[in-house]
Length: 474
Image (cartoon, rainbow, N blue to C red; front, side):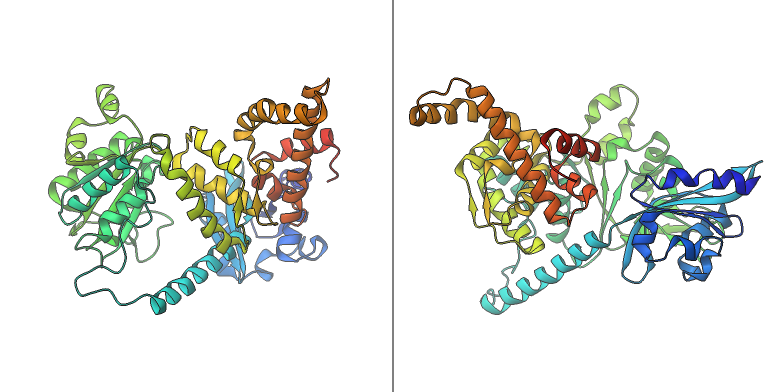
């Protein structure tokens, strides 16, 4: 009956483009979908009915860990085989309150890991060349600027950086406030690098990405044998890892109330106990927090402790949103084009002035992060080295269409004598541009539809819909 329950799930797996594995309580493979065959090069007929441990080193088997502990794993980075990198989600399957198997879904991120590795290697080579070409700085003068990655010359940005430089040499708790994507972590890293702690670690913890139950073990660590499934030797928390350096608490406004109490206790005493431990631990750590939430409003609503708010809000840095410093956009575009030319092996050297104009007029709700992602897309989709209006993402397309309707229709009418159906011409032009974008994305990803959809910034379903409507073969 249990095998029937597990086997009933297998037809669903063939429609999923991520690797899916189902094993029973003994580790016998009951389902192995086509994506898993492609990822690992193991045929369905070879692995089905056999124990999965015969094909993978037992120490790397995430499904075995879930079978042993009964605890699910969600989007965990994993390297099941040399040269293969995945994000795995594995869930226990229950029948009559007993674990009878595990369903695992793996997303292949090998290409992204390789790109990241190649980029780091390229940066190292560039840094080495710069070191050879640049003269040695005079004694007492820093060779690199801790805030060098904060690009721009707008007075609001420069004022925020100047304040950060002033704060950096101190031990003051610092709160960085600003919209998502303005560069709060870059400010935090800059403060760390400009401080006397620069030789120590910089450890980041996203308070909005962990549950209340996990926060304590993440922050303070846990002792040996603290709970079922714990590592035999225990595990140091982020505070211990940051000893002698800086702990950056991102999205502090999303920290659950119970976590706020425990963080406040540490800030007051500078001591803590590991989960399951009996000995107090003292660390030398500077705290920098960041949020895009209105903390004062959260305090008034009783969702953020007032005493913690005042403990964190000693020094406040406020990086400005990109829409308030649009003069910096052109410089940022060039900076990121250079970055992604190196990362993706492109040679983009020309940007249509109309593209700059559109990007300058856009409101950038995602700020510098959104701009950086947009530039990466443009670089990837411009293999001929030229970025034109046709490559702009859908979110910017209304501005492009409006401009095309105002400017291009006038010039077309002047040259060809006012066509009677200018709107139809415009729609066809947009359709042609969209077809070209889709073909470029499919070509750039080697025909991978999921990858092409990601590059275009749309869902896979939307990609299929557009291809059907525009006559683009998949």
